[in-house]
Image (tube, rainbow, N blue to C red; front, side, top):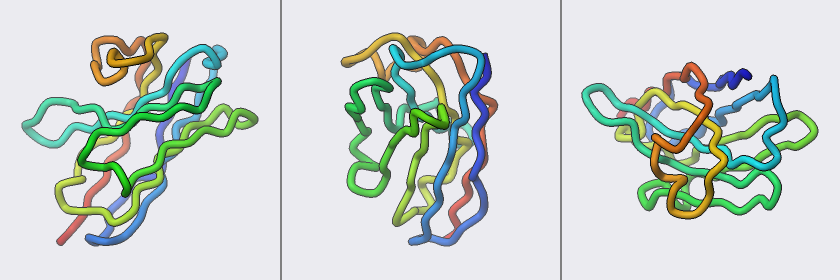
Length: 124
C-alpha cells in the first residue's frame, strides 16, 4: 500500500497550491482519506477528510472556506486545493487513510496508512 503526496512548495501569502495524494496497492473505496499537517515543534493536526465512496467532507475550522478536499476515483487520487494561503499554513502535509468516519476522522491514531509528506511553506 502506498500513498504518495506531491504538489508542495514555497509560495507567498494569498497564493494557492494543490496537493495530490496518489494511492496504490489496495482499493480505498470503503475508506476515508484525510489530510494532516505538522509544523515544526507542533503536533500533527487534522486538516480535512473525504469519504471515498460518498464524497462527504469535513474540515477543521481554520481552513474552512479556503481549502477544498476532493477525489478522482478513476485516478485513485485525492486532492487538497489550498487557496488564500497564510504563513500559519506552513507545515509538512500528509495524506492518510482510515476505515473510520464520523468524529474519529480527526484523530490521527485512527489512520492506518500514511504518505511521506510534502512541504508547504508560505512566506509573508
